[in-house]
Image (tube, rainbow, N blue to C red; front, top):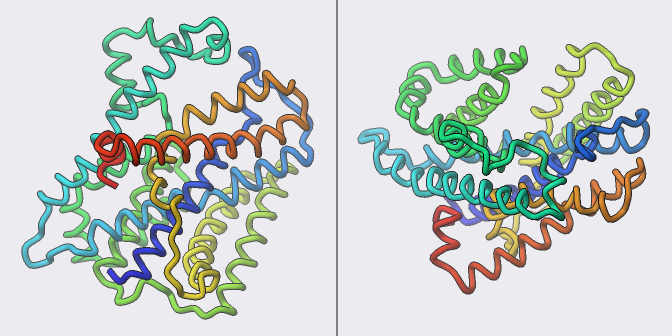
Length: 350
């Protein structure tokens, strides 16, 4: 992998994690004193849905594409090195998953035990968990719900030998059926299908593509950015007017596909094909694992401090992620400098 591509992946991963934070900043479904308040659809609803249920939805597919690409980019096709790659993923995925899942439980246990904060966290009390619930919460449904990405990615990686054999023999013949299933939007399995589709896409690029850019040119990149924006606005607009769910889903899927091309190629022109770096890029994974439940804490704290009205919802939507990112940045730099060993274990050696 050349240096520019390495920097590009770091930069895009960072910007993608910012999108994930804003995806989770959506607060129209946040409970206030145990109930979800409803407001008539207005500018607040439109902005939050345009961003959190539109613009940000390219982030997770990007991460799966990058994960699939990185897994197979140095794959020895003559002597497949499955074991060493799985062992690396145990360190970089499974260990951080367990640690952060346990930290989430401890975080909630503490907040649910403090009189001033326990009313903000109304889920089942951690102290009341039975053994089965505790095990399920640690390994399957962690309190920091964003960990589902690591969970699904690790499961997919465990079957890497299967994907390699299928890609080797079927190539596009494997991707197309998975793409069609994803487009059909089977609600119960959509996250799993999305994870598999884009991991396989990244894997295919690593195994067969000679270049990691589609070379569509600056003008066509601008076209894709424009089409992406059109899909996002149309999808949000149709959703606003309660249009057919089939149409909304179609526009959502198309916005993701066009957005991926626009983001990947757009970076080259925005960066002028230069290597860029930032101290923020080094804490991308740290942001991922710690932005929840910290973001929820800030959302509920801001609502308590500012009051509850439609305008406050929009204010909290933008302020809570900024506070979360600022605090996590300080935490990340502090741990990297003073507790390097702990930081590397939590982040899987990143």
